[in-house]
Length: 164
Image (tube, rainbow, N blue to C red; front, side):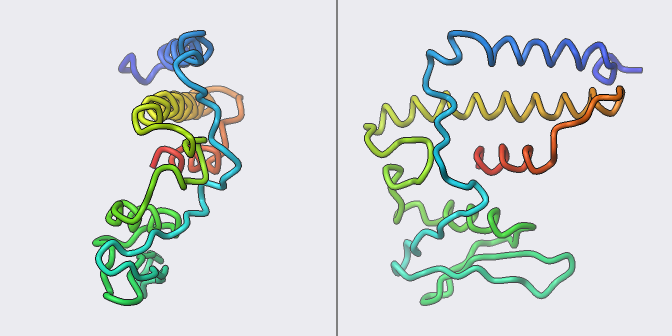
């Protein structure tokens, strides 16, 4: 058995992540728990940066069900349909960055920060989210090898949504 697949290795990896999460330097870096009151699966659609038109979520006629966002006016749309509506909204927003301002985002408490301050804060939050997502994956591995209950899939999806 490869070392990476052993319970011992997973437990060591878990402890390493927990040490970083609990470290003073991790929390001094930025307020890493300030995600805000926003629900990460509710993603407001950005205006189209081609025509300033409103966007609309569309359910694709295919199996399995997929979602895509398109502009109501000029019909611009994301290239790939997504498994979940929140993922489709994020893809749309990614291709329409010109109509968005980080200060209006409903999460992470960025509204009063300069671009440099916001970038620094987001680097700390991103690291925190990556650690938590990795920890959840390792805890699922440990749970599969023991009697422990794994973190819920909804929790892992929320972390993924925040990261995106």
